[in-house]
Image (cartoon, rainbow, N blue to C red; front, top):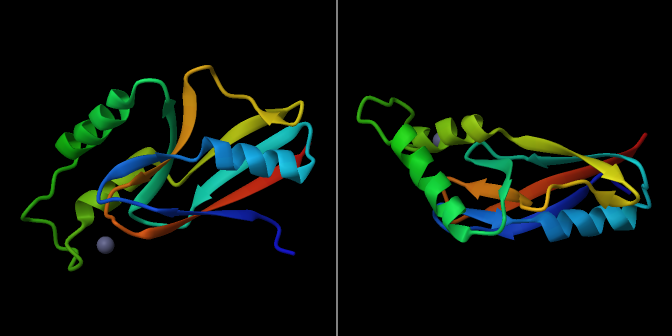
Length: 133
Ligand code: ZN
């Protein structure tokens, strides 16, 4: 038995996928009532963030904003040609942590956990570890 769970996501070219329900299911199945849940992306061109889950335009605007902040540039040297995706990934970060209380994630009303794809479409793996404490 591995010490963590894996969520697999097939992504689009550039998108944010809400994985909150899958993470919540892993927390419930873990049997942990009070502790910490760590959500970690194993990838260098896809990150993890928590943001609004009510208006889908927020996700569209976030992706657009990151596109404007970190555009592709002719002076980039990385031979794979996706340095913009590496920059966006480090900006949002590879992981997040959420408090677990009463066997559930403690999230704000409008918060969801997202896998952010910056260089898809790809098959992505997100690791989830729930720790009692
Ligand atoms: Zn690359």
